[in-house]
Image (cartoon, rainbow, N blue to C red; front, side):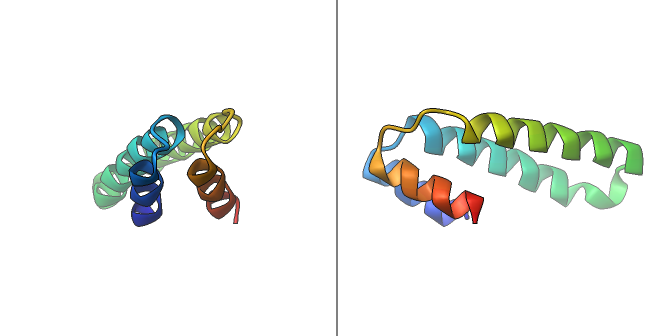
Length: 75
């Protein structure tokens, strides 16, 4: 997924793709710490991740590469 995001950034979509990249990097960092986190904290992170992703998917996307990326995320 990070490769698809980087491709969209390289094609010129800086607004949507860069925010998705930041969100993915955050999720990867949480995933690496998953074994040391309590279930309640993981649940709160999951809720936050869903909220951020929902907000990102509602953003208006002007660049064609961003639209392709959005379709990939929805799939």
